Amino acid sequence: MTQKKSVEVTVARQRLLLKTDEDPAVVQRVAALVNQRLADLVPASQPISHQVLLLLAMNLAQDLLAQRDAESKLKTAVRTRSQAILMQLEREFPV
Image (tube, rainbow, N blue to C red; front, top):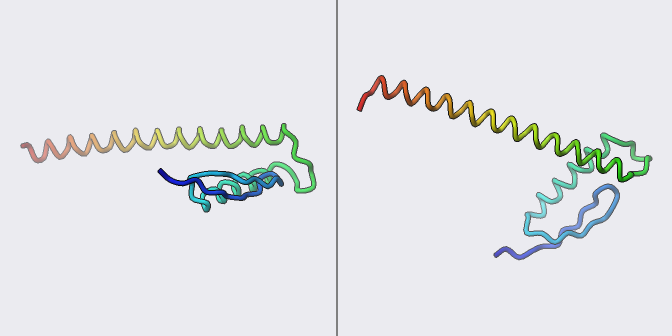
């Protein structure tokens, strides 16, 4: 069992001390992504409201779903092509 580590990050101008078994570098990358996406939504001088954070969550969730859809389509395409190649090989080189 992996021992949890404390990782300090700043997200949405808030310091957070997280206990996690994730690699601290990964946690920092996640925080950086959230902060970058937040900066894309609101100017640095604007206060960060709950509505802005909800919009950010919706945007990130939309991106996640789009990635999942793309992954699913890629898996389907790879499976289809693999089966076609296998069928061609079986025709060319019967056992």
